Image 1 (cartoon, rainbow, N blue to C red):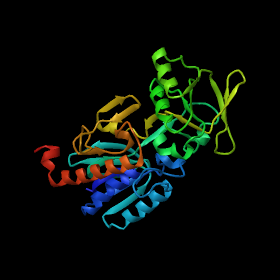
Image 2: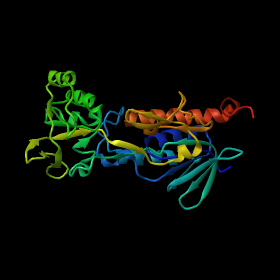
Image 3: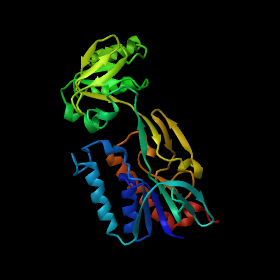
Image 4: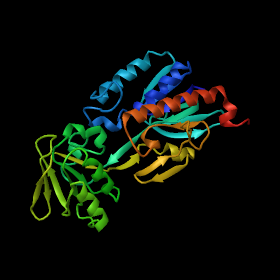
Length: 305
């Protein structure tokens, strides 16, 4: 057996999990492709003691601290397969290399599929974002917009309006019902029904939403719901149950972050409907410590057999 625990994903959830396994003096390997979900953002907000820090710098510092534990090894690469074995699990890398472990922690994260409107992708994480709690304060009082993505966008617009005057861009979607329009109006939110053809601005900033028919509206920041997707299919390959939520798929876990496959834990964005660095770290702490406890009390997790 190569390791007691293999962690697939080396961002905030994965590094947090690995830290707790390492501090329990168990051999742990972190496999990471080096593409964290928040790599598009220059600043991370809301994490205790690190508000406004650069997420890439935070991860580099955390990885350097983790590397100080002799029990830890890192592999830069991509895991393409994982299977149960008689004694635990095997993980196959894109290079063909095969590793084994007694426990797995899945922390490979999500990617965001964005609307195909010019001007969105190049501003993602800057003046275009999803979470107002993470990115709203910096645009307080300025001209905000919410782009329709699903029926939940109505709720999104009402939340975003806490940070400033908000326009709800339907982008050609049907007009909400009278009750919903009244709720938006009560919060001072204006509705723009026309299809958006492009978002323009200087550099990473936003200035204008261009609309079908030649009109335009001024805007400083846009919030939208992306379409999230797993960065890997390893959970499905292992037989983990997947739940369909309002915002997309998540891996089903219990309170200890163990999946429906005994010995396989999961942490971070792939297990929850709300995302931020604090939650990812918290999930990683739980998954890492629970994976260790499962090694101490294997019968409680894997069964007496």
